[in-house]
Image 1 (cartoon, one colour):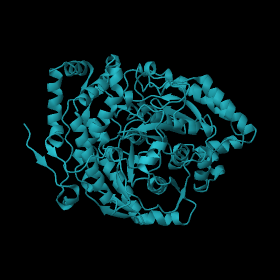
Image 2 (image 1 turned 45 degrees about the vertical axis):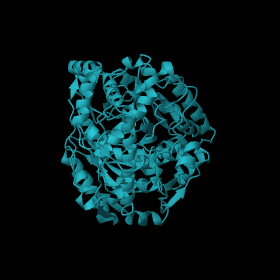
Image 3 (image 1 turned 135 degrees about the horizontal axis):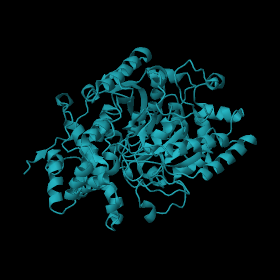
Image 4 (image 1 turned 180 degrees about the vertical axis):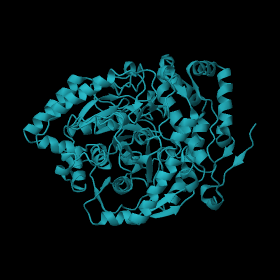
Amino acid sequence: MGNKRVMLPASEIDLTAVKYIPENIQAPHLTGFWFKFFLNLAEVPGIGSLIVNRLKNDNKFDEKLKYTVIPEYPMFKPEFPPQEPEPAVVSIEEDAKPEDRVELALKCLPEYDPASNWSGDTTTSFRYWKIRDYAYAYRSKFTTPSMVAERFISAIEEFNNKNPTTPLLISFDPDEVRKQAAASTQRFEQGNPLSILDGIFMAIKDDIDCYSHQSKGATTWMHEVREVKKDAVSVSRLRSCGAILVGKANMHELGLGTTGNNANYGTTRNPHDPDRYTGGSSSGPAAIVALGLCSAALGTDGGGSVRIPSSLCGVVGLKSTYGRTDMTGSLCGDGTVAIIGPIATTVEDTILVYAAILGSSPADRISLRPSLPCVPNFSSQESLQSVESLRLGKYTEWFNDVFSTDISDKCGNVLSQLSEEHGCRIVEIVIPELHEMRIAHVVSIGSEALCALNPDCCDGKGERLTYDTRTNLTLFRSFTAADYVAAQRLRRRLMYFHMEIFKRVDIIVTPTTGMTAPIIPPSALKVGETNMQVTGNLMRFIITANLLGLPAVTVPVGYDKQGLPIGIQLIGRPWCEASILRLAAAIEETCAEPKKKPLQYYDILKGN
């Protein structure tokens, strides 16, 4: 059936001969009755195998894996060569208390003028309240965490009564929120808040443990087989800083989707256009931040699940280096592509939350040997010079492969401004084997997810999953052990290519997504949908950071002609979060369009 292909070793590839081949995903778009019918066929032994094999053949899975000799050794989890230290940064001790780390990060931020921010000049363009605005309001006794909590609770109740339903939180206990807010209010009255994050409202994605809520992963049954006895490590770090944890945010079931569609609890809608998706799988966290209801949220990112919804909702999302944050206490903690990361309205707030949650697990410290985490020191003289000296990699044909030229034009303009106003150097790069990278990622994340789910799926609970999750699992079950090993061989090749690129550039720049927020088909609300063309457009630029474990951040830069947010993505060297966050801050401050107020927005700080 297939002809054997033999790849040259990565070190012998002639990059000048690499041709960009646009993605052409072959798969039907199905919703409603036809989606159910398709899944029922796909799950029938024999017939299902024929359907799945046809899909894999049309998308060259076997050609790239089964019939190809890949000369590299497998890389079963990211392995990074030592990196040069970053300039103009402050190192943060992993073992320090989270509140001390946040305090250190706070000292590195640009000067804050509370009066001008708090006065809220209505003639200027829309802006979100920052964490420092909340802290100033609490310290100045303009409001209290308890007063803000009441506004938050009434906003959530109003949201829950909307028609059609647009659920933000799967698990929400108003009394628990009031209790946390009262404790925070008391600390402010006594003059001893725990940190700048004290009294700051944050949502936790439903696949990260937050005691006393269950972690359902947006399924109808995960809480039946997995008891939550304590916070995930990242959540406990936020709690020790005084953050008010409002509940478990909605998501695409088990994180296995890019739109945020959820037939179990209802689909979270985009605050900029309620007829459109938020993006997934961290749909609830991104929406609740974009709505103004929370300053920040925690999401997980195994295939763009923090960055895609952040981009589509017009907020900031950070995927740190693989192993930079401890995944203990999350449903996706055992894989090799996922991290827990912050979503916030500004780069500054993202840095503060990142400083609280960072810290590798003991096992990862041994195997990954992470360099000391750092944050950019904006108060140093070197900070401006370090932006000016950056070399930014752009693979133009890939960069321009978008559903709407509004995206490439807007992101291209940002690069031009960085070059003209900041002196950054734009370096044309080529990235080979992007199609192989997509296949290697699907096989990796799919096999790892299936391994975790198999015991319960074999116990009959798989039938209680949504149709799109079951469709994905049907594909994942077709992967063999040999496919998984081949994917890890590809991972080593692709790591080699990228480490070579990082000898010439400091940061790779792409649009975050190949399209802005897609429309929600009404027929998809009850049973979900499968639309691999939309998935391909949303994930086009995302996969690198997951398969290779690299840090990446999305920053909102403007809007398309329909007023939908566009994000730009910065992919950094391993462990170099500070560099991408510094450039992200420069883009936010000098290159991005003024922010537009989302169609749905709540001011819970002032209550306007």
